[in-house]
Image 1 (spheres, rainbow, N blue to C red):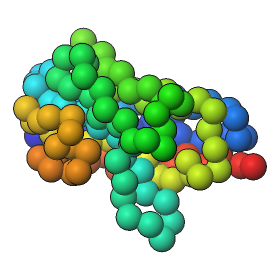
Image 2 (cartoon, rainbow, N blue to C red; image 1 turned 180 degrees about the vertical axis):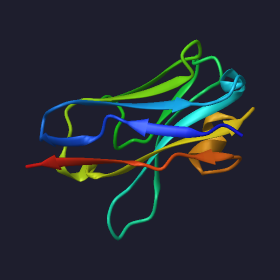
Image 3 (spheres, rainbow, N blue to C red; image 1 turned 90 degrees about the vertical axis):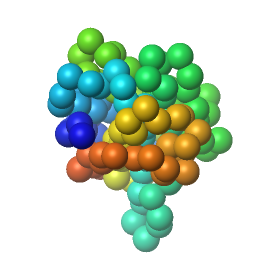
Amino acid sequence: QVQLVESGGGLVQAGGSLRLSCAASGRTFSRYAMGWFRQAPGKEREFVATISLSGGIRYYADSVKGRFTISRDNAKNTVYLQMNSLKPEDTAVYYCAAAFDGSTQAMAIMRGINSWGQGTQVTVSS
């Protein structure tokens, strides 16, 4: 299994931007589909975005489509989430996830996930 460590969270005003990073340990990062999920206080964890092993397929929740971009750098064992036009309803703890030989759509319903990061807080003020 890979170990995942997120970074890049913080406090930002509505309309602003943040970029989250998730660094993975191990030498098999390119064999993992990767994803971002989030959990707001009192709510269940929800899917945000997933990306395929090579990065060629990306899948987004409707709520973030057009504002967020997921990408990966397999040479750096890192996946990113660029978040633009942030809204107060984007406030949550954001988690990185990995699925060995997983698919982007299966990950979106949390199937096949092998590892989770510890989460990073994103707070958007109005």
